Image 1 (tube, rainbow, N blue to C red):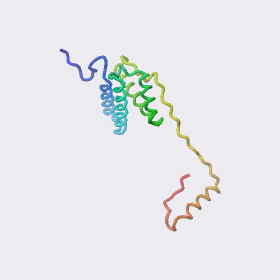
Image 2: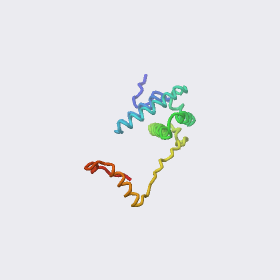
Image 3: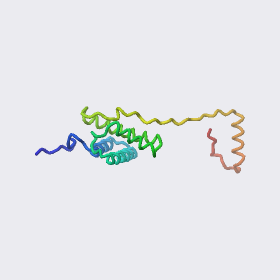
Image 4: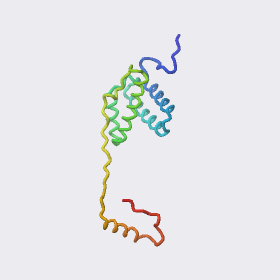
Amino acid sequence: MDKVQKDQPPCRETSFEYVRDGFLFDRQSQGVSKRTLRIYSQELGYFKKFLDGQGILTIEGVSAQVIRQYLNELSTHRNPGGCHIAYRVLKTCTYWWEQELDGDYTSPMRKVKSPRVVPAVKITFVLFPTICLLLYNLYWRHLEPGIGSDRHIKL
């Protein structure tokens, strides 16, 4: 009987858990930060729970539709930024697996559009010199003498 090599998947249909563990090990060996590794692990763990609930055990069972369903479910209790993190982690992991198999697997993420994230709006105020002077005087007037030399007004 032939032994299965450790760097090869145990069979044609590969468990998502096997892929997840390989991905996390690869990222750890690349020296990503502990925080990034923790985020990868958490997000892939959440996705694994979702897959288990759907009865999907293999990476081949993960389709674009399954990922869309997962992201849709996340949007009920996460903000857009949280959904986007999940999207990016899944994309990174499945693209990594695609590269590991040298074209024998195509990431379903290629068919899934990124969740929309509304960019933060920066508000810029242009203050005239007299308004700046007024704010400065109001701020400093309420301080005790000798205190506040290290304080600044950030505009």
